[in-house]
Length: 472
Image 1 (tube, rainbow, N blue to C red):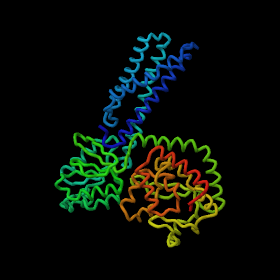
Image 2: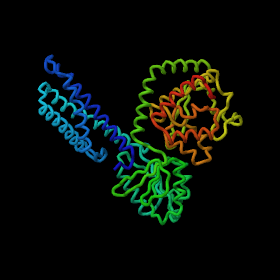
Image 3: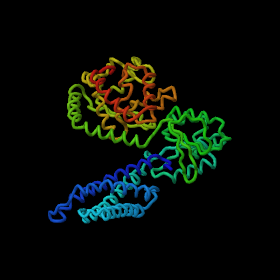
Image 4: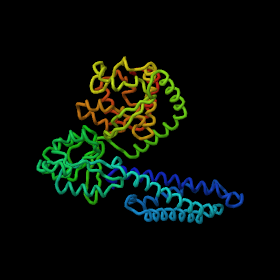
């Protein structure tokens, strides 16, 4: 049964991958160190390396059987260390047994013992580091907590809130409660009741909410379709304590919280393996590009400073995943006081909908026109990718001003995925598209995203950027 919050499963997967990598590294080091431990004596390395797949299989089986109920937050480090020792004893024991049965006389006992001892120490040190980094540090701020809105304000809702607080290794923050009956209106100020259930669209719009949980009997839910519609429009995951309703979900998942069954309906699929692959791909590509990109950064920054006064890099608050705000970096392409002069040019806006575009914006500098045409002004956002605020591919992050002008709940579904440097609209006309077409392409990407689609978009973005078509 998966954990209530996907971050816990994500952490366990990362730990398993990291531990497997450490096992490989330590075993290779044990083989390579043998000549130094034995005064230059050599061993049959191909035979030893041939045992590595067996080591990984046995260690993986040990992790699956011995640590499937791993609870990093609540288990003591001593208990986790004991589990690590068991896994490695099983691995080393199986290795010794195979060497004995196959009569592999050339396999060194020193290599096996060195591997067992150092692998135990390495895994213990890494486990201690992970517990400190992901639990102790992350728990100091609610920014890392799962943010939950509960439909209900009675005993069932309060019981659920108490259980949720005890269920997550990463922490759960209850955003508030919505009253389905209206009987709790007088207690709103002191009891975290944000309003009536009819206010759900406004509450989801104005708050950072990742999960909505319905915690009332079916008899009290006359307007459940309104809740479903609001969650689908915003791209927010919906869970029920009880009955299943008609909900067009990308994934339905059953989760147990201290014996309470919760059904999750996700309008946007969040496959943890795919998200992890996407994040690793973002980091690898971005870091690999840095040696090429950094000299360009320096040249562009110098050009901007020579052309006009002000900082070379411009930061602006943008709205990201789950409507969390972050500072997005760009090379400054306008005059220093461009933000203050926005009111002067607001009437020149040529874009339909909430976004703001002017083809010949008088605030743009000479260097700014070039770096906009070539999209060089967007390069500093690679640091946003490294920080985890953005991805290489995803809907473009929008400014707070533009988001506040959204007139349809469905427009905010784009916040259910991490924003990116490029997306379908970049390879389909860029600024030549209307806002409705732009939104349609963003929603199409959200519903059909995959690793191969991301790769295709990245490759097709290159010629579009080189040509400068559709850039403003």
